[in-house]
Length: 168
Image (tube, rainbow, N blue to C red; front, side, top):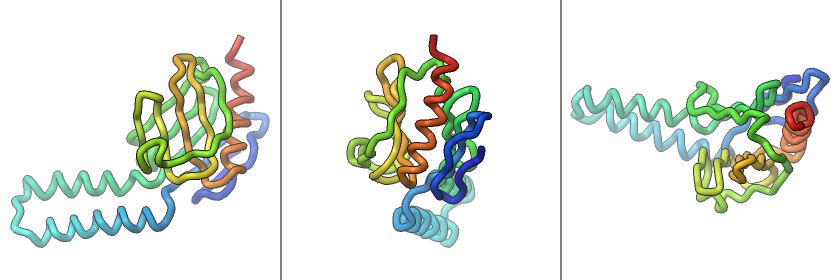
């Protein structure tokens, strides 16, 4: 069942065992990011910068503006996460998952907001608060922050339902 849009709470999976939700940075952070990107774009356009410099920089700015909104999905293949334009993205197949559990995410454990990679694993960190942690067989983790506890619980329930089908 497709659960949430625009970051609202999601519902547990149905018999098809699918779940999806949208997640985003908090509004103040989004306004700060988009405002900064727009200011940089305006400065580039009104400056005397050559086109071969301005066009690539504007392309990077446009790409960066997509990063605050993420789509999360659980289906028969695994857990998927991507920006709303599809890049970057990650899929975690069930065969790689040891366990999943709800957690309280702290942005400072990951060094801030966004798509984070570290020695401990990967984090999709949009805010401190409710989330879930996927523990992989190689002891790395995938940690995802959620809009609310209902969204985190629904994701954990959907992944757990599939783990029984993929673990001996």
